[in-house]
Length: 192
Ligand SMILES: CC(C)(COP(=O)(O)OP(=O)(O)OC[C@H]1O[C@@H](n2cnc3c(N)ncnc32)[C@H](O)[C@@H]1OP(=O)(O)O)[C@@H](O)C(=O)NCCC(=O)NCCS
Image (cartoon, rainbow, N blue to C red; front, side, top):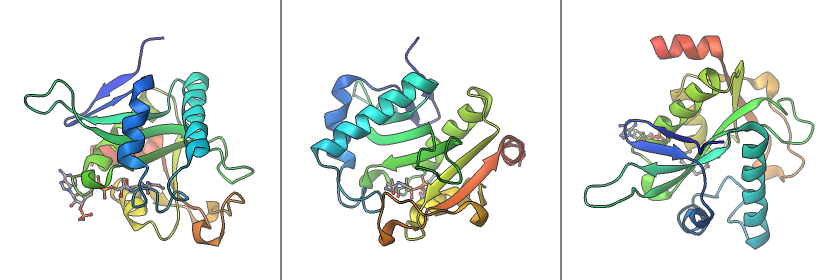
């Protein structure tokens, strides 16, 4: 299977290379970035994250891809900004387990430029137009205003009826709150 690569105006979403991980952890495995994701990952956590992404890609042909800024003038390749993409929601016995999920995690100095929204639009377009999704959910917690703010800016619908408690986390990371968009809603949104 050919490596996945997708370009938007300012970004590249692409498959992982083995030597990407050190840079990915350097730029995103920080207290600020991981504030609402259970804190910085230790070695075991990083290994499990790599395995989850690789297994997702093998099983589905999509995953949370590398997000790079397109090549800056004078440089051969762009800066790695983080990751964004698609997975199957995998919280045990949740209301959305198995549904396609869009997610994002960018380095702190890349926040506030619209890069996450641009990457998320690319991922949602791919979900509906290439990977056959009927519905895509996005998951976060109430405290993570930058993340649910992005869900709102994307035109996703708040689904209080689907909120759930994630038994893997404590009170500070619960409940999981759910936003969703369907192929029909996304199509209308794209035409607005
Ligand atoms: C969640 C996260 C990806 C949001 O990133 P973000 O940069 O705030 O989101 P956007 O890409 O939509 O950018 C919006 C901001 O860029 C600004 N912006 C600048 N240029 C822009 C452009 N060309 N287009 C759109 N927005 C632009 C907007 O005004 C807005 O700024 P504001 O927040 O000061 O109002 C980021 O906070 C993050 O990586 N957090 C850590 C990881 C995490 O928690 N992930 C989610 C787990 S559920």
